[in-house]
Length: 624
Image 1 (tube, one colour):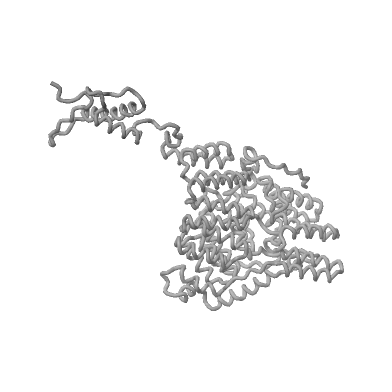
Image 2: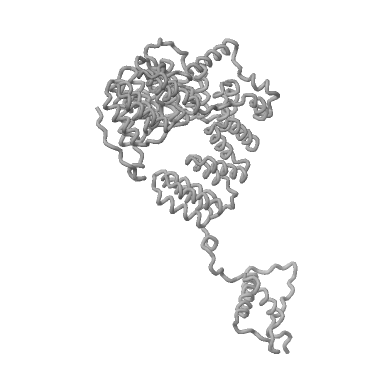
């Protein structure tokens, strides 16, 4: 006697609630349930159907057939991409990104690009591979490829990754597409209002364009949405110092160093401001803080050495330069400044050796060639100076360094009497940088020397007509400081923090007036016209020079320290430099000279020249 039809399976027997099925029984039941939909799917695809004794499908089979038609639960995907079919473990993304970074540092761009392509294949929704690939292309000057990588990343992440927008904006800003860069920075802030790099980068762009009030608004929004940040505080402090509001600048620098006590840039910028107001004791302490925060930072030892040279501490400055070179043997700027120091100490041969070493470390660093050419011109070697200037222009003839080189070359030709060549060089310099006051006034002085005062006055008028006036609204600061630190009771309390005593304030006012006189210095006072050979001190008006690796400007090449100035002994430093470099850097102070003389520039040259991009070869230069 048959109790069930052949088409429908018997119903499961009710199990006792106190008795659990064994693992083998559960596995067998799972296999049976997985096999039934597969059979139903095969029947739906046209396979042989199971029929009951009456010749029709049972209700259970019909229901499973309908489910199999709607949801193919147990069939493998057809045409499924590899990203979702066999994606590796997420740890591989981190490993590949790290390996790509290592290959990029070694200038092995092909290997890095392959790894990043694999990352984008398996994890298209992650924005980090697109950012790394865009920076990789930018490092190779393949800017169209970099834009395409960023655009692809924005599409893959549906525009929700602010890092890609921000990197794309920085690329457009460097390329001169200011309007496009603003749009991209705006997109980054829309994607994530708490992305601090977008607010800060946008503010830096506006500062370079002269829109100071707009930059302040952007920095204020960055603080509003992101909270305290060292970079925003530091940039605001530099703006305040540029506007000669030094108390506000100190307050902002204090906020920056509280956000990150290990920020070497904040300590150096603060020290630079104190140098400007001739608060030398505090500046020296800030330099000590900078080297303690980052002992291997190339700027900390360099700027501190320049400060000591300006104060007349030649031996200490020389020692700091040597420490900086021992820590950063690939930095040509430190050797360049040390060479200028040696030249001012009446050691031109030592300076030539240092200049040659710096040029071998980085042959494409233009300020080294410009400074070397300036020294040879002062020594009376005009032919060698012209060759060095030509070498600098062969690296790049369209940037700011090229403008300074052309200006210095024009002064050389003016001194030797080649006035036609001097006019041509000065005009070429102004075509690159039309805002250079020194170049305009040098040209005007040349015309006066040639007996044409009318032409000289026309040149001065032309300069005043085309120069860009940067206007800063001082009244807006009072409302801005309210949002910097809500914990402060009032703006008055904020402005009275760390206020110096009465004599100090008078000294600051006097130094400010002197600074105004030096910033409007004529070319004759700067030692660029005949009859003026007095070397001037290092200018501290440009606060951005701390973070730029472009070296010294032409106006700074007239000397680091006046050797005829009386020596004034400064109070001893609180930092034991010898013990510090022994403890933190493992350097022996007695071997600094041996390290400087024995270092082989060919051994520290970057691997870029052997395994990286092919570059235009520089012309051979006959040197004395």
